Image (cartoon, rainbow, N blue to C red; front, side, top):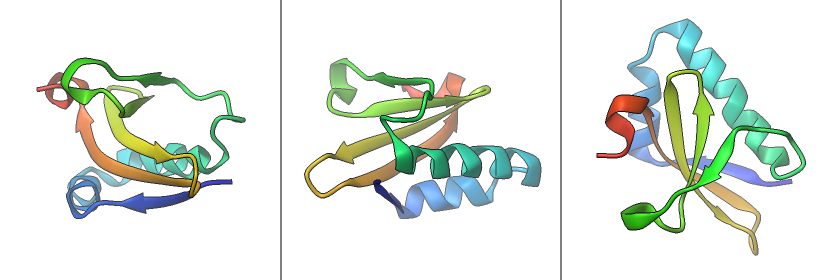
Length: 86
């Protein structure tokens, strides 16, 4: 099982969301602890985001990196899809 860490930016972005969206994204982030065993909508990113992954939660994207050695997932940002890859 992985432990989950949120960056300051990701924590702030989550706090700015409405309660229902924050709860939905929080549940998906909690499910990441069981990754890759859980069937989640996760895709490795390319280009300037190489080495990162994205988790799709509705219209939001959770950008994260996974340290498979230490079993730590670091949530980098939580953004609407239209702002996630800029």
